[in-house]
Length: 267
Image 1: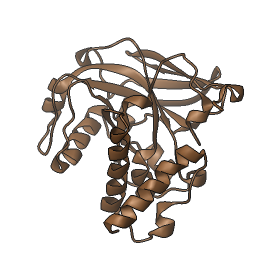
Image 2: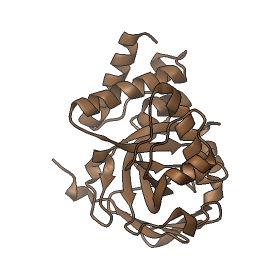
Image 3: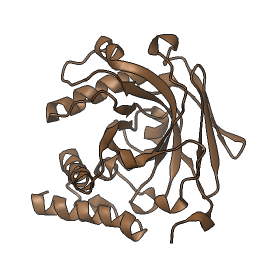
């Protein structure tokens, strides 16, 4: 894709939230588009968000578990940017109009105390860089109609990033084995998913290393204070207006997300 096509596609995705209507897949217009094109489209949107005053608050790894890869029919991870406006308060209803087609995933959030920049980042480097971990819920959302996405579509759509809800009890990395932690996901009091940290590339720490080494060659560093979401421990669960979703992760505790009822949507 040339620069003009990248810009027009980025503008089309930006317009989806403004209009409240999903759009057609990127590959419908550009069937030969590759991951380099998709990340260029993503970056064009990030630059526009920051131009409007938003701030990068971290990154996410998507498609990190086999369950998610099977669900999305892809075979590799991807990454996206988390902006400060995506972070929502626990227990506080999020206006339903914030999202188009929301789904929710339980994760373990890393909060960094030191910079990580690849290539060459190791597990030891990652362990030293993590200040603490928190239980987290990620709301993923697609601006592509009916979640009809390829890997190119989801990368262009900022890895389907939507929202982040963090728990409030920080835990030292040394106090929990993230490979072995189990989690449950309840929607409106009903158990809908179970998972474990090892589902995320064998360990969420492996995902953090993958991210640092993937973005590093592009001149991107993971900065102190950034929140890193390494990937979901379960399949993504649809979320409807009025839903309350609770994730419980062994050793980390609980985190709760509430999507406002339809009547709470902004006019």
